[in-house]
Length: 267
Image 1 (spheres, rainbow, N blue to C red):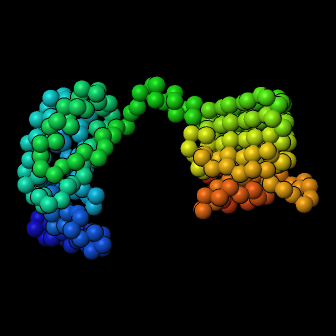
Image 2: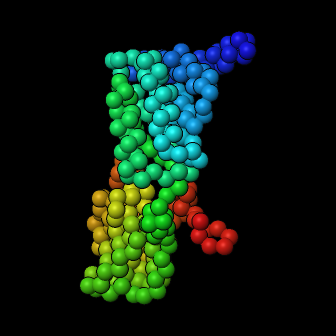
Image 3: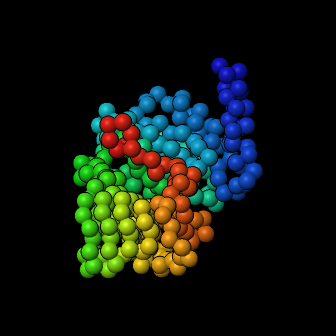
């Protein structure tokens, strides 16, 4: 038993020694982290598991027992651990509730229980489940809408998610999407991709002669071209947050995750 603990201690030291050297004085030492984990493993009840990480503490809460039992055990286990903490530094606490979705009242009870402990700051409360409303919102934001029409002067086409427009955008017309914009036609008007702040969004068109392009909060006016470019093009933000228009063939390199078409539909 002692030999196994010693081996585990050496492994734990190797894993965290480099992080501690870089962040000395701002985190738990690997010794503290190790004994937090060992002490947690020695507790009889397992409704609450406390694990020391390089970022602080991780609390895993059982999702089958009563919430009352969880609160009681969190209090019993957390207080001894808090005595090991350095009073001069705050310790981040992440809480994972498994397949249990806490109500606002339960979440507040948990926060009030942990708040009195010295220097423990709840960074996040996560679970494996989400509300149906949240799921629908995510599906909408990540959705893909196909529209077949010509966007004429004075018209605005606004989509949540990605937009595939089969048609032209005439001068004075405007297309907007919270995701990417793909135009199988001529873009002669204005296009705004990532309108909710998505800086990874792109704008693609078979013919790119826009009056204005916008990605997130960045925009560029129409580019003067010395010659007509017959090649399909894409617009994106580079690392300097500059809006760049380039050949469509570079899209796979600058946005490797853009290819969302899979067998059976969109991923």
